[in-house]
Amino acid sequence: MNERIVIIGAGHAGGTAAALLRQHGWQGAITLIGEEPVTPYQHPPLSKTWLTTAAEEPRIALRPDNFYTDKNIEMRLDTRVVEIDRAARDVILESNERIGYGRLILATGCRARQLKVPGIDFANVFALRSIADARRLKSAIRPGCRLAIIGGGYIGLEVAASACTAGMDATVIERESRLLARVASPLLSSFFHDAHHARGVEIELSADVAEIAGLNARATSVRLADGRTIDCDAVLVGVGVSVNEELAAAAGLVCENGVVVDMAARTSDPAIYAIGDCTRRPLALYGQSW
Image (cartoon, rainbow, N blue to C red):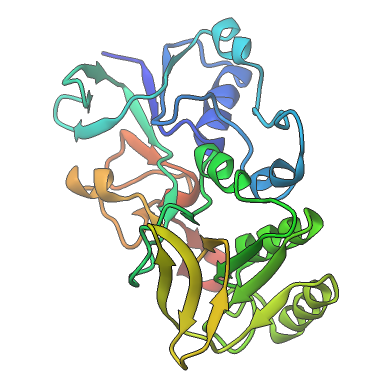
């Protein structure tokens, strides 16, 4: 029987799982597969220190690159899995190579949700989910420039604060009547609203975006549904995430806006586990799942 543990997703969850397997005594083979060309790294700094560091990029790797070699963890970076063959217990790569597993861990995470408005494809309209996204956004963070941020969640607010620190004008556009409406209480929303406004962030609430207008393939303003326009030199779209559950769903695993797991992170296939942002987990205390 193949005892290899394959982990799909070399982000924070996948990288941590590989490290903990070794820490807790797993001696068998581990293969960690990631679509990005870099080893696992921290994501929180991407909207903070990363954007405001003038010279060298901050070191945000979870562990030194030689950690994986030293711990005999096979890294398959810049590699995409296109199918899970549950009957054969193989994962199939884009190259058609098959990698067998005894146990499979899905750590496929989320991706930035797309906003469906005209102008979303302009070159200076950004998302922020990966290190590559952060590098593109950082190129637009310049003193004196104007940044329009669509979405008043944590990512949007963190980038707004970073932009103001860098000498930019930042405007947050939120469709709900308060910031962080889906994740925070009204009291906490009010605190963050006042804190950011005091630091120079302009905030537009109950504001629906109708269009990102531009010239020569570059955004120059955001037009709201009420006809007002917000001039800008760049746009960040931070309107939430979509779960990367397609690979699991195509393999026949139970998914409900996330790969459904039990309290031990097991999916509907006892040989497959799922962890991190791609999962829908039971919350026993509240009698529901999330």
